[in-house]
Image (tube, chains in turn yellow, brown):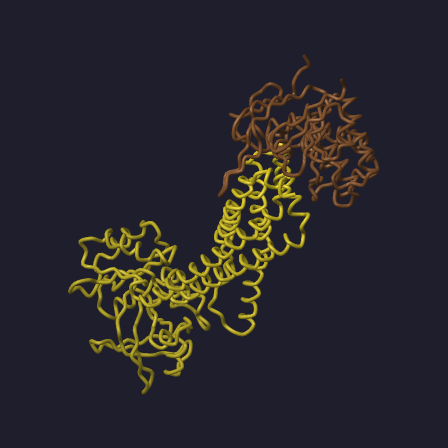
Amino acid sequence: MVVLRIAMRFLSSSKSQTALIVMGLAVGIAIQLFVGLLLQNLGAGFIGTITQNAPHVTVLPGGNATQLEQWEDMVARVEGIGGVKAVSVAADSPALVSKGAVSSSVLVRGFDIDDAARIYSIKEDIYEGAAPADGGHVLLGRELAQGLSVGVGDNLTIVTAARDTFDFRVSGLFDLGSAAVNERWVIMTLAASQTVFKMGGNATSIELKVGDVLQARSVAGKVGSALAGEPVKVENWMDLNPDVFSAVSAQRSSGLMIQSFVLLSLLIGIASLLSITVIQKSRQIGILKAMGIRDRDASLIFLFQGFFYGLLGTVVGTVIGTGLFLGFLKALEASGDSIITSALNVPFIVGSSLVVIAAATMASLLPALKSRRLSPVEVIRGG
Amino acid sequence: MAEQVLRLEGVEKTYFGAVDTKVLHGIDLELEMGSFSALEGQSGSGKSTLLNIIGTLDRPTKGEVRILGVPTSSMSNNELARLRGETIGFVFQFHYLLPEFTARENVMMPSLISGAMSQGDARKRADELLDLVGLEGVKDNPSTKMSGGQQQRTAIARALMNRPRLVLADEPTGNLDSVTTGRVYRLLRDINRELGTTFLIVTHDRRVAEQTDRIIEIKDGRISLDIDLRK
């Protein structure tokens, strides 16, 4: 195709100009990808920190109710809801735990440990001992165990609000990554908690994890609908942490704005550079028209050039941008803990690349029209 | 009567602006197939405008241009582009070669644009034409790495690439020394005789004009003289 051949030759005949344009584009694209990936991963890391070791949606007793009575039926109804990844039931109650003269106010959490392990990283976070295998054992957090000066195998006493006392043996110690949780939680089996706090077969909450944490609000809506008529209230992490969520949203929109401006400056850059190229090549275009090239083909030459600038710039820019991001992460990791995740969002990279290539081609429309309108007589008359 | 390659009927050209300028006044002209004619005139006489209109690079304000009997006034730009590519070859005062391409590629260009022949055939014909104009040794040279005479001969070879019926040459030796000028005109003459291509050559050099078959002189936008030198 002669038009393609001419466009390629125009590009290759002015190598330094082409290299400059491509590098300019590549730097713009690299910034766009770097900023995009950084903000996405910062947001994801931030949200991840909050949602990783916590339920995303929680069903609690509503109205005057303090316990969930028909929880097995409720679990069956919410398990099948789209987006729900894991369901766990808890029987919780505040209590006092004492060892000798030392006592501490705690929250006893009764779980089916296997179910709860899909909501919290309990099993992975046991750093000594094991999960309670029966109703006589409990798990303690690191700070609580230190405060009570107990270790695995030691006994302690739990005092309920009704002043009933129960002796338990410590089966293991955990560190869930939060001092507040480690200081306050005592984990035992669901049945043990129900017995200690005289709940009968009741529970106090149903906790859910969803596939996409940002869909928690919509999943909570569906859970609410599925449990309509039951005396329950449904909470989700987004509504419980509005500041976090709005910060992440603001970060996302500011990221989008930065990327839009970078894209806009790229567009203006390409359009103006190609406009200059049309003027530079007007003699060639005029002579090609005199030789019979059609107006449409004369404009295609510059559309192809815009496309190739976009393509080359995107390839180079993607390598630089992702390289920069990964290098930045390495440097952060080397300097300590980083909450930024390291996901290379491939759809985002491919999408951004396609947008830039399309934009570069679009930006060449104006120069292409100029080339289309160029009259061979003007060039020939001009000498 | 010999077949006509070109016929102008009452062609007028006015440039509209703050002051309208009428450059051509009702030109009637015919060119026979295979003729070798000179278009003469002072600077500003309108001869280049007339050549551009004949070459369909420009449109007349009034009148009709017929190429091989076909009227061109109602043709679209694309139809004119195709007609030019297939029928007319141009040699300009400035060679107007594409600096990004080699001599051979420049010569092949009209054929690549029209798509009239395969790349292989186009290359073969370009080589033949470059041999014809005596440029055997510089076919692969970039067009910018050739002398003025070589560039102009490349432009002549390019004008002949699509076997045009009519070649329009606007002072094709304007930038060349007298020895090269003589060589280029002999070349055009030889091509005219051997290939039967019709030539219309703009010149202001009477000695050059006298070597053609016919002299058409333009003065103030009108044909002031039209002599057939063969009679």
